[in-house]
Image (tube, rainbow, N blue to C red):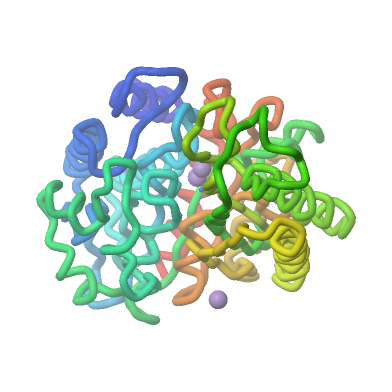
Length: 412
Ligand code: HGY
Ligand code: MN
Ligand code: MN
Ligand code: MN
């Protein structure tokens, strides 16, 4: 008889085979053939577990176990199916596979819950492909920017709408499928912690109390290209130098705030990109997160002040800041946390309540329903790297807490 841990391991290692490109770590990008293979695998496993499976307008896979009272709003659990470039095999996937395992457990014991249970695999949470993030869940909750599906484009210049259409979806249907308050009873997501807390404190499970807020921007600085050797330092409009000062201002302000605010620039593009030419255009990303949105505002003020100084000191420089993602900090539902805690204590799992420094689809669904998250430890606190790892024993424990809690919620 295969154990739950072995079934979860089989799912995770099978899905890990579906890669959008060769390279280090996990590279599974939404709406690529590899993503389709992973979605089809999950849909098949959902069907085997007795779920009714459908795919929505943004390519999310939803498997529903009908309840005795099908008219009641379902309890939903799952996570995202896409990865960052060169990421790990557990980010998102652990949440899908443990929700799938809960469906199997219902099926194995022949339980027909009072209200439906729905397991979901969500597309395009990570964001690097289109320079944003949380797209799948925001689309489902009616939280897209007005023209996002036409304006946000991938490296090939394709819009989200074009990529969705090529994937066989109809972007015009997104709006008609929007979820409203009351449509789902609750959303629960198991996820790897992606940070060092549980690993460092030798704990095996986290009950999430809150998720930090985040703002994501692209900054474009335009200047004047010229000869790297013959142009005196006092006669330049050097866009990389302006970027470097702005990034330092942002990072230094985040550090000085000392309230857990973080600042990251992960993308830098310069033009024309030759070592002996002063770059006349630099585009860079800003990812800033905090439990306190005012802190993010403070950081962005420092960035803007630095860019203004560069402009004054270097005639010919200009800049533009484009917001690409805004997600407010959210608090998890207290009663759901208490249910998770009771199950965790009954299973004698060492745990703590904690805040999530990473963003999750849960923070989007939270606007429309009670939500909760379970964390399982990330070895050495590493994630968004090929070395990402979580022991299957911890995932199986988390799956048990999730399943028992889902049993209670679908009985209500
Ligand atoms: O970036 C994040 O926090 C998440 O992994 N998408
Ligand atoms: Mn994730
Ligand atoms: Mn991630
Ligand atoms: Mn907001």
